[in-house]
Amino acid sequence: MSTNTNWKKKTHDIIYEADTPAGKLFDLILLFLIIASIVLVMLESVESYGAKYVTFFNNAEWAITILFTLEYFARIITIKKPKAYIFSFYGIIDFLSTIPKYLSFFFGGAHALVALRVLRLLRVFRVLKLARFISESEGLIKALKASRAKIAVFLLAVLSIAVILGSLMYLIETNQDSGFDSIPKSVYWAIVTLTTVGYGDIAPATPFGQFIASVVMILGYAIIAIPTGIVSAEYTKNNKVHTNTQSCPHCMASNHLDEADFCYKCGEELN
Image (cartoon, rainbow, N blue to C red; front, side):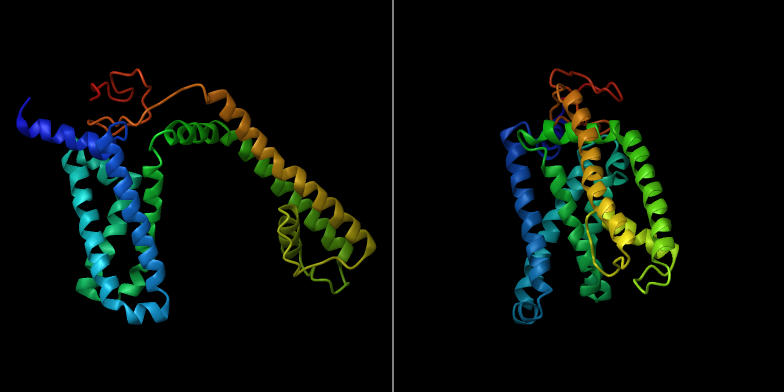
């Protein structure tokens, strides 16, 4: 194995995996930089702090941006198919959260780009692969994917109930000056009440309308429990599979089984 290939392999293990001491340390440093960056963005938005410590915020942001830039290019260099990372979800997030400082240098208007810098917070999900969090997070994702058909049917049923109840309340509360001026507005009330949010901007005035509202409120508590049960059942079913943080250096596929020697997606030998 050449020195260049060996260097890339070691760097890949540090950046993309967290099963080694070096990989864990890298993720901890990355987590610290992400949190520090978000805190700086939040403090900079406070007018009194932003005006008083403008130089400190600017220098700190440049330092963090340069470190993120080095990490971004290191991720590209250490994989065999750079496009797999560049056009992946995290690759796009990394790019969008790094570029604002450079754009503000050339075009000004840094405050208009603060929202993009906040995208760095999404990178925390990548760091959640640390230690015991990997199996739990992957198990939850698999449970959500396995439950998507059931949840879709459930949401359709809830939407149908909201439309029916909203239409019914429109008929009951017509000419009562209680806010049920149209069916769409009444459906909005039904959704707010079913989800137990209860803004209070619309409220029934008739006894029968108040009775229906009480039923909807009680029904809302039952509805909240259903998707939780669906996902919990799938999570329990799929939680017996244990995965690690190994990332394929060829196609970047992750979630490999602990005993896997080859990538399940492209067949490439794992490090």
